[in-house]
Structure formats: C-alpha cells, structure tokens
Image (cartoon, rainbow, N blue to C red; front, side, top):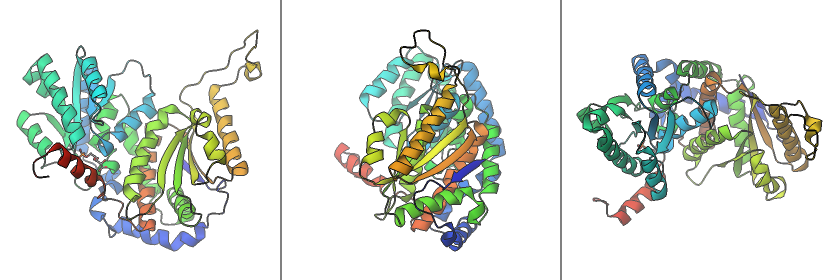
Length: 427
Ligand code: PA5
C-alpha cells in the first residue's frame, strides 16, 4: 500500500549491509527490550486499542456534530498535530458542510488567542481539551479562557456537557477536573507518548468529529502493523525508508531531511513528521534535522536553494498518486497565457509532471538524493497505514542511530527557563 523507491538516491543505499541490524532492532521493538520500551504501546495499538472507548469516541463525535457549529481542539505538539494533519489531509482546507474545527492551545500569541475568542463569541462551540499532563502552559492558558467564554455564554451545566477531555487515565490536573466536573473523557494510554498518539483518542475524537471514518483508519493501521512486522529489509518498505535515511545521514553526511509533498492539504502532515522525527531523534548531539516544503508552491521560494545551494539535504518525497478531486484546464479562445496546449488535461496530471520534472532536476542535475514514497490515494485507510509506517520507521531509525526514541529531555529545558521568568512557584 506504500512503496519506498530507492532508485533516486544518487548513491546506492546498501540495503544488504543493514540486514542483521534491522533484524536486531526489529526484535528490540517486538520484545520491548530497547531504551524507552515502556512507550512502545503504539506498536501493537491497532489490535490492542480499547474497543469500548472507541465506541464512546464515535458517540461523542456524533453528539458534537449534531449539536455544535465548531469544535475547538485545545492541545499542543503530540496532543494536536496528528488530528490536525489528518483532518486537513482527508477533508482539505475548505471542507463544506462539516463542523468547523479550530485549534487553540498551540501558541501563546495573544493576537491569535484574542481573535479566536472573538470569533467564537457568536458560535455554538464544544471543546476537546487534550493534554496528558494537564499542566502544559499553552493549552492550559487557552482552556482557561475558552472555558470562561463558554460558561458566560451557556452557563456552567451546559458548558460541562460541551467539554470533552482527553488525558491520563488516573493522574494529572485535567483528569481531576474532568472527574470533578463530569466532562466526558478519554484516555491517553500510559505507554504511548504524545507524538505517537494520533491513533488514540487524542487524534480519533477530532478526526471523527470532522466526519472521517476512524474504523477505516484503524484498519489501515492494523494492516500496516502486520506488514511492517517483517524483519527482512528487502520485504519491508517501512524499514527500507528508515535505513535509507540513516545511510544518507551517517555515510553521506546529509544533515537535513526535507519532506516534500505536492499538496497544501498535506503541509500539516509534514508538521507531524517533523515532530515525530525531530523529538524522537534529536538528542545526544545527533540526528537529521527534519524539514518540509510543499511543492510546487515552495519551488518558487526554496527551490533555488535546494537545486543549487549548500548540499545539506536529501529529500523524502511523499506522493499521493490519485487526487481526491480534479479539475480540467478549459479552452480559452484568446490563449494569451499560452495554456491551450494543456486543454482538457487534469490539474492533477500537471501536478504529477511537476513532481517528475522536479525529481529529475534535483536528482540528475542537482545531485540531491531523493527517497520517493508513493501512496495510492489519501483516504482514511491509507492515512492510518501512513501513520503507522512513519512511526515504525522512526523507531527503527532512532534505534539504528543509538538514541532512545521515546523521551524528550530537551523539551523541558525551555519550560523551566520560562517558568523562572514568569515566577511560577517552585522554579
Ligand atoms: O509528543 C510529546 O510528548 C509532546 O509534544 C507533548 O504531546 C506536548 O508537549 C503536550 O504535552 P501534554 O499532552 O502533556 O500537554
């Protein structure tokens, strides 16, 4: 369902040389013996997930769709990126006849927060507050303000019904509040870290509210789980990707992996990838910098640098073969723009030629290695599979690099510095 093509990598990636290491790491993941193995819950989640909670997620999603105009998803990092990237990838950026989804708690910009609160004043809205710890500053600030607005509009009882909390099963400030106020609540499993949590209630509730088929998404993830369990690198597209990025970094000296998509609907999918790989691998002074561009848009900004600038990077192209929607170029009598040679052609066809032309320009002319990953179409099934593909490849890649993929010690340091400046008690 997902193909990894390594014929555009400029240098030959010696897959064979990795055979034994891949088997060893595959066993580490499977037997949960590597560093951070307490957080490998995601690796079997497509079969282990809580089926009773899954039904409650679908029920809550229907309630929200039936009763509200807007769902405000409050969360940051792993607590919101998965939902956002899925909803945009599946529904696009201008979806009609859907509950509007707005994201808060992912910034401390007073401009953004003020404008969202103003926008919501005359909207009927529900809140899905998502935080494992319940104390992350960004979502906590937004949730406090949103809650006050909601209570001022509908009163406390109705507000409590409109708030859906996704948090730890037992501990933390948000769990306590949810229990006390009687919010409908969902669980972020103990053994799944934020950036690996998209297929838990963290992602699934907002995705279901957006009208997407979460059964199909879990089925895609399940099939990917089965497929990418294979320890033999030649037969495992997911591990081929992990090994290729490792080789290009360690042996070819590339410092940057540039994710490339050809659709603005997938821009946030790359944001999700940036967090997944950046937070999982960027430690102990190691790792590729994950970066992203959306082509052909960014060919008109960063294209020049990629083609001829400092050769820091390789590209990982994620190309979806079949567009969900298409439009044809129409005939124009005057033909002043000279486009009549494309008359009757689908825009998706033009986009695919832009991709092929760019691949050749970057690889043949620019000598920029490209890993090419192709997906048949973007639907719930394939997206579920893609999530699993990149999570599994991330674990393989991080263990090959020799880092614990599942901690993020560096994230705490800015918080400590900020709390000291803000005068938070205890800092
Ligand atoms: O992936 C991660 O662990 C982080 O991005 C967290 O999800 C993020 O910091 C939010 O944390 P919390 O869910 O505790 O509010």
